Image 1 (tube, rainbow, N blue to C red):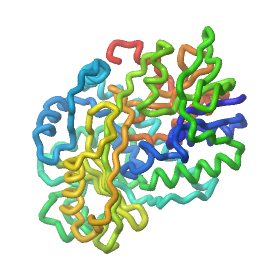
Image 2 (image 1 turned 180 degrees about the horizontal axis):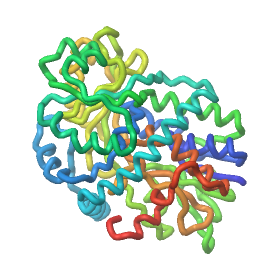
Image 3 (image 1 turned 90 degrees about the horizontal axis):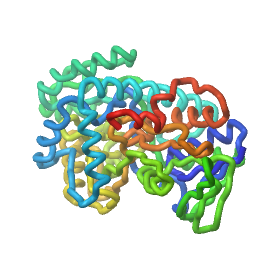
Length: 421
């Protein structure tokens, strides 16, 4: 079957790879000159199934108010005269109940765990490298109240059989020795030893090369303008390079997916949530993190990627703007210098932002639409890197008429036919 994959981020490229491996003739289309130049370019670098949780949860509305008032708060909202923004926020709030949180989390953990296993298998099959490490994630608590509040998270980890360690100050230092220089600034942490790290951009570029070996073609520098519907099927894609046709179409355009689908009458509740990162060259390896340290107070991830430190965080709700905000960088700088003051050279840091495609309930959208040959793989939010391989493998199975290894029914677009959207 001939398949057009729209989007060359980590979701699009992994989709293309698994589809080609399943025997399909695949072409990837993207407006960028190379793969992974937008949201996949400089994310926090975490592959963290254990932290795959919905943003919408009990207590989040109250926490959000506190975050908005913090100097280095993890949340920023720039109100706009955009009904799509406000409808999405309302749907998010409606998911902030214990019952909805439990359902949404139960949909996220399996795909995230499956994806990590797929990533490991893919790495063994292809031998690709991307500054990967398998050294776990340490969630660092500056306050006793944060440590005391882990009971709910621990219960969920136990429920899904995710290994974890609750650590005192000395335990945190054993996992991340550089923290010994700032041991008065935290009281403990929780570590997920099975989490991994790696450069998503490097991975996507390397996998694109592997996909090309399988026959995948990349039609880059090509703007996707609109989909052409013919009855119950898609008849083609209008692009800056002309009309393209295939037997099946996969939309993997992240935050831009809803705009492409809306003219077809498909309502996809995905909204861009901007994240920021800095990438800092390491100047003292012993003073840098070993893996990922999540600074819980500021919701900032500090990750070792080869000879660099990637610091990522902030949830900014500001539409499709990719403007770099100096105040957001100040938060990232503060978290890094507070925890690893001698690790990296901030004067040589690069500053970046990307638009995360968030659903109001948390899980991504994978699978069919009401058009028989149009399929979705989008809405992964902050977990695109974590969920990419599993999402792509499951999608390839669905398109090939095979039953995926995990149940994807509750990840389909049809779940929004229900009340909470």
